Image (cartoon, rainbow, N blue to C red; front, side, top):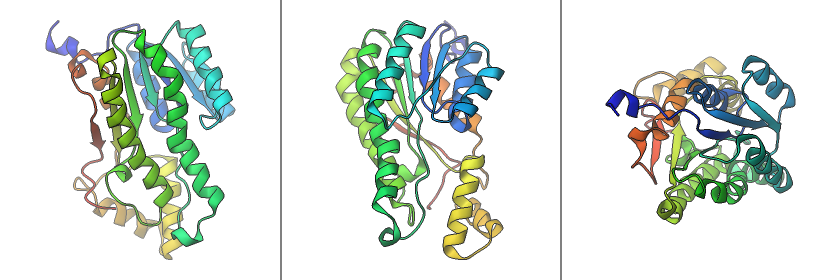
Length: 262
C-alpha cells in the first residue's frame, strides 16, 4: 500500500455518526459516504434527518436522542441490524448550552448540557464498544471542542462537558487499546455554521455589544484569523480512521486555526 492509499479509509467500513444530519456531523457522514462506507446517522430533528437522507440515498437513518438510554439502545440495535456490525463510532451529538454567569444559569440548563454533551457519549459508548471489539480494527472519535482545552467564561456547562470528553477519551483509549480499538478526540474551534452564529449572538447579548463586534473578537483570538469549515473536521476524522492513523490513539487533536484563548 502506497502512502496515498494509506491516507484513505478502507472501503466498506461500518460507521455510526451521532447527530449526523447537520453541521460537523453531516460533513463527517458525507465524507465517509464518499469512501464507500456504510453509514448510519441519528439525529433528534426528524425533518433535518429526512432532508439529509433525501440528498444521500445510501445513508441509513434513525431519530434518536443520545441522552435517552432507551433510544440509544435502540440506535445500537439498529446499527447491528442495518450495518451488520460496527467499525467506526463518531460521537458527535452535542448542544451549545446556556450562556451567562454561573449564578444566573438554571439547574435544568446545566443538567441538559451535561446530559447531552457528556452523558450522551457514555450511553453510546457502553453499547458501541462491545460491537467495536468484534471489528478487529475499531476506531472511536469523540467530538469535544477547543473549550475542552481552554476555560470558557459564561459557557461553564459546555466547557466542563467538553473537558470531560477529553478525559473520557484518554481513559477509554487505555481501556480498549488491547482490543485493537483506537480512541481519539477532535477539538473543533470556531466552526462556520448556524450553531456558532447562535453562540456569538447570545454572547454578544450577554455582554451588551453588537454581533459584528463579537464575531470580530472571536476571530481576533484565532492565530489564522479565520473560522474552521465543517469539512476540515471531517478530513481529520477520515485521517484518524485511515491506515495512516493506525497508531494514533488517546489524543485530543485541535482543528481550530490555533485558538489562543476564549
